[in-house]
Image: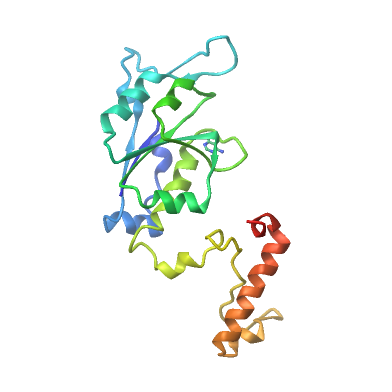
Length: 222
Ligand code: ADE
């Protein structure tokens, strides 16, 4: 899979791709990630990429030309163009699964007050990572890259993500424990050290349902 990230601030991504699972996936060529500064595509003599909104109002808007030209230069018939925006479709684990099967993803990170509405016309999807407003689409792009990359074949063990919360079963994860058996008086539930795998399975499922009922009853109705 190839992911192209269109951003005015490529340095914001320093570090994120240089550690842990994402670094390994990049080193092993499970994913290719390119940071593309769309300022390089501006035709403006002063390298301008934004301007004031028609009709007035606060802030600056990203202009069409640099982003259109950049997308047109890198897009192929295998590409999915995604705009990151707080008014997009809420991002979910099932979206990450779906996107993990694509060959080429282009992520457009907005910044400043917003962007010219016509930029939406070159996007296949618009995604929001939550009901809050960030300074730009860079952090949301990191969220997508991380959540998609871990689902690519050979990046992590399949069983690791099949049991994740928010998979098709819509149950939150059950509680997990590691050594020691007792820590500051808090004990690991007896069933987990019983060696009885059927009982452990049943306990985990029950705990998952209980936690989902308490914390996210909206998921159970799905
Ligand atoms: N840009 C700014 N806020 C955002 C959000 N919540 N999701 C996606 N892109 C954004």
